[in-house]
Length: 179
Ligand SMILES: CC(C)(COP(=O)(O)OP(=O)(O)OC[C@H]1O[C@@H](n2cnc3c(N)ncnc32)[C@H](O)[C@@H]1OP(=O)(O)O)[C@@H](O)C(=O)NCCC(=O)NCCS
Image (cartoon, rainbow, N blue to C red; front, side, top):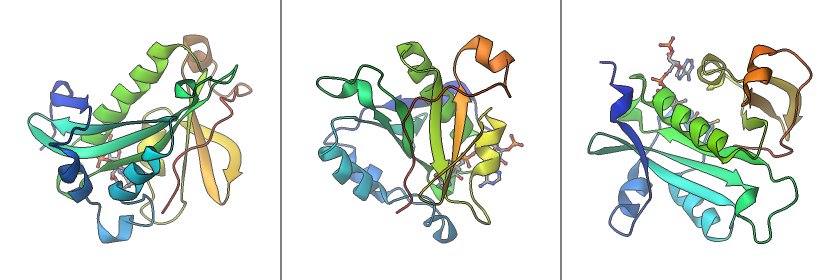
């Protein structure tokens, strides 16, 4: 049953909720597309540029997102990039519009920072890969690969959105790693 996007929220992970995050999982055939959340959180420990949230639907935790946000580095580079590093919705909650609503909130978060022209990510190509999901949200092919992963980008500024198909502006940052 489709959900009300207003019920979807991105919340900080706490000592009380971290085990729940680790227990979230995707389908067996999807495990090639995203690292386990425990691995992502372990990487985040050593990556000051990691920005991560649990995805909730109402009072249920349903997913996890992690950005690579270079503006969080100290000091930040002159032109920080921001990319989606990890994104997943637990198998039990997929196919109800939660992923779309959550990623839209991530996009709004990045756009509000006003630091980058595009949001990038990459995916492992293959049957069942999330390409149609991202294209449905307005991402387009950047025409580049990163270690075999296909790079997509989303224009964040109105002029770019209107001129989709025009030469791209890169944030200079990549994206989701497969495990
Ligand atoms: C990809 C993923 C996040 C989508 O989350 P979701 O909550 O199931 O997606 P939604 O229900 O919001 O789907 C929105 C639209 O995308 C489509 N879609 C979602 N996943 C899709 C897939 N794998 N292939 C084709 N279409 C897909 C839906 O059919 C829906 O289309 P519609 O607008 O025509 O109805 C989720 O399937 C997932 O966690 N997959 C495994 C991990 C993964 O691949 N992460 C991305 C790493 S790059």
